Length: 176
Figure 1 (cartoon, one colour):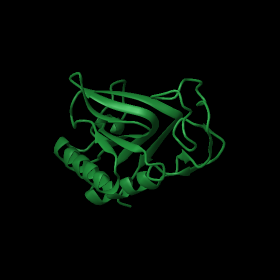
Figure 2 (tube, rainbow, N blue to C red; figure 1 turned 90 degrees about the vertical axis):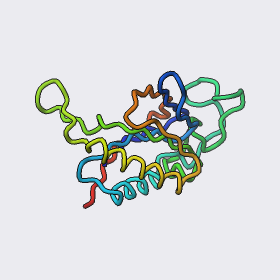
Figure 3 (cartoon, rainbow, N blue to C red; figure 1 turned 180 degrees about the horizontal axis):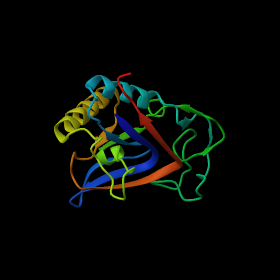
């Protein structure tokens, strides 16, 4: 299973002009199932995502590093929050900072671009398996984490995000 994590200040997914999923500070998780993937692989990937320490353990309250006003008001972002001016290392997980998860299916993560100029997506799971594993991944995420939103499987989605850092991390999990 493949995932790309983006630490975000905010993110949302729009389908047919309607917001179907939205989070504030946390992670946008783009996820793709491959043909050999199982529920056990999805569980391993989720466990890794929830424990991955990509949020600062120390931060200085004050204007965010981007120089923009904090989201939703004029007060500085709280110490340790996404977007706060950091002086520490990344030692906290999305669970530790009570961040949101926006989980979006994206079969194009399995693209093979080695032959020609048109990517092949044969390395992605067939749609029925992809949807089953995506639904399992989302259900397990909702059981383990309080703030989980999603896109819509196989829909034409418009994903809006403010990447915080930027921090973008690719992950690949297999049964081995």
